[in-house]
Image (cartoon, rainbow over all chains, first blue to last red; front, side):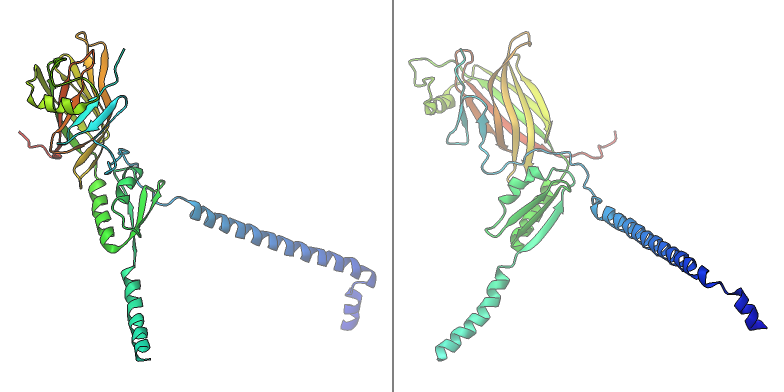
Length: 100
Length: 228
């Protein structure tokens, strides 16, 4: 009696093929969405890591002083016009350009 | 054979010693008060033959590689340089010398040696003095009588060599109304701090011979002035 009932509940052979098609399509869809979800999550994590790496480190405060510190090669006086000559005793003689 | 063995032992002992002797170390410093580019030229003067410098402008950071002894010098130099702008008082004294006699020893020509010898013995016809109050990177101006003005724009100070750089140091002749100023001389200067520098200006048709004595002095920083 029970076997009969089961037999009657079975799908007919003609329904098996579309059912299997549906089932495989649903599985493929689910697999695809799972891959997409993982890819999206991975991209998000990578973007976050990249942002952290590219973020500038602790920046030094803006230095107020850009003034050049003299070196030994800097002469005592460099005139913007005319000539300067260093002489004995540390003095500098400035020969101004003759103005007309 | 015995000599060969001895040579091999000597080499084996000497090679590690040579490697240890040639060791270089790295020092990285982030400057807080000064632009790293302003000190790089001065830092390179402290380096040995194996020394190297890298500059990171974005972080205001300098990295130096050299022998440990030289690195200690560089560290000390950087710690002395990386301080807020120092304040200086530049005492200026201008002697206006009499126009020389055309027939005398001094001839207004490029033979400057005549000028120095002559300027030492001659008495000034007028003497003016003033004091410039300026900071590193700042500018100041002071009047020398009613006829002359001294303008200065300071750059950096090297505490190790006690020298102050001026981006511009100019002596100007001003007319009595104070409207027009003609430069007598103008240029960049590096003056020793604490000792005078004499600048002798050859005369032209417009200006007499001048002697400017400039003495920069480092002023102490007063953070908490005494309450009165």
